[in-house]
Length: 327
Image (cartoon, rainbow, N blue to C red; front, side, top):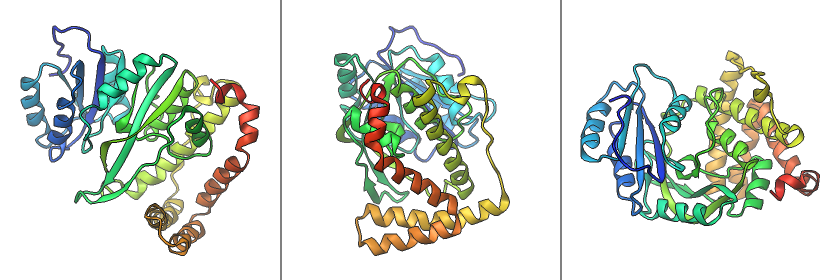
């Protein structure tokens, strides 16, 4: 099915979905896309060399709906390369993302996002709020992302979440960067923020599944490093209008067994802290696990201090980088 195209008008939106061994949840994800009230789209699905029944499911949908394009990889390439593979094939004016296991609960999600971007030419990306569930469909929490461009930029500066990847739609102007095996979405948001404005709807349009068993501690260890690199690149762009990767300088990713061991212990307490704080429980219930996580892995404490520092001096940053905050 690789490389198959259709005789159809150029769609308004290209939706990119990368999937690997996800036969249990794939149908629900695809059905939520096909149920959208806005129908002028193509759904590009990259099957990343799955060895379960994913291929059979995709064949069924491929025959069912002409808007579906399936790209089958001979070997596993990983999320970032798959997303770029999809974007390079995309014909749409806008790119929308969805991840396997997540679904769009609002049938008007695409319609409202397209209408917003069509009416507001100075905006380059928009997202929505999201509800988080576990593998048993229990609600873990909801997002509280900033709505306005100014607030989104400030939260980006202090290292707070600004979008959930399966909610976004952006103008088809840019690729992900292959270096970012993790936090490729954060790097994308940062680079897009220097091109145009950002917006997030108040509506909870997406259900996002958090698979804590599937996200190993080793992956979290690497995620933190890539996230920190993305934020350091952000500061570089504010100062110099480019970052190290633009100059083909590749940052090094560490892998230290002792550090990984300590991180594994620390992050378990950090996750407990995050859950307790999200549930808005007594401050002592989430403060203790936070302190314990810092004791086991001090670099997390350094990350936390950096966030607080940027928060305290946000007004100074606003004045110093006035052009960025008033794009």
